[in-house]
Length: 331
Image (cartoon, rainbow, N blue to C red):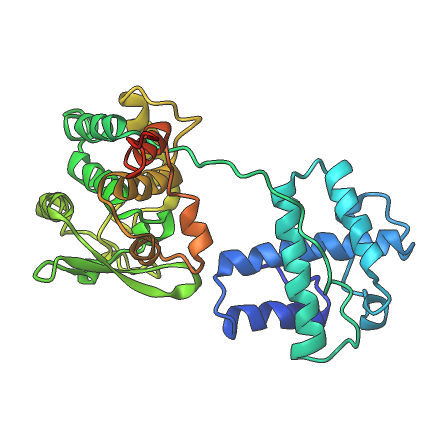
C-alpha cells in the first residue's frame, strides 16, 4: 500500500503517472515514494524551511512547486553527501535514489511542464563496484533438489520440490512464482505464462523436470476448502497450508529450510540466488545465447543479463587454449 496522504499534490501525480502510464509495479512506485519523501524532507531541512529536529517527522505536504524550483544541482549533491555520510548509504543505494530524482524532475519539466529548469539533468551516478552474484554450483543444485525430494517428514514435499525445481530450471523471480495460476500452464505446449516486472507477460518453456514436478504436485494439491479471495487462491498453482495462494514469505522460508537441510549457507543463498543459479547454469552448460537468456529472464537491458553470465577460470583457460594460434611455433 502506497502512503500518499502526506504528499504534495505534484508528488502524488508523479506516482500515479508512474503506476498508470509508465506501467511501473506497485513495489517500484512505493520505492519512488520513499526516495522522494526523504529527498523533500532533506530539502526542507537544507533550505531552513522547518524547525523540526527529528528528520523523519519533517512534513513535506506544504513543500511548494516554487520552493522545488529553487533546487539546484549542488543541492542534490548535498543530499547525496548526506545519504553517504549521515545515512551510511552505499553507492548502489545512492545510485538508485539519483535515478528516482532524475525521473521525477524529468516528469516535472518535460511531461507536465510544471518547472522550467531540470536540476537533475546532468547528475552523475556513483561508480559501482561490479560484484558477481552468488550462485549454487551444479553439484550444490543437485544436492538441494535431492534433499527436498527425499524429505519424508515434509507433508508438502511435492509442492516444495516443484517450487525449487521451477526456480532452478526457469530462473523465476519470487513474485512470478507465487503469481502462477494453474491455467497459466500449457502441458501440451510444455510452457507457462508468468507476469514479470512492469506487469509484462512472457512465456517460459518447461523442461521434463518441471513438467514432472508440477504434475506430481497437482496430484496432491488440495481440491477442497481452497479459499476464494482477492488473491484468486482458487486459481493459484501453489497453495499454503491455509489453502490460499502461497505468500512470498512462505516461499522464502521453504527455500531457507531446504538450503539448510542441504548443508548450504543461507546467509549466502536465497530465492533470488536460485534465479542467479538457473541463469548461470544455462549459460555455462547449455551454451545458451545471451539474447535468449535475456528473453527467458525477462530483462529489459542486456547489461542486466550479463551480470548473471559468470565466466570462471576454467572457461577462460579453455578459451585461451582453443585459440587456433595456441600451438603456433615461430620458425
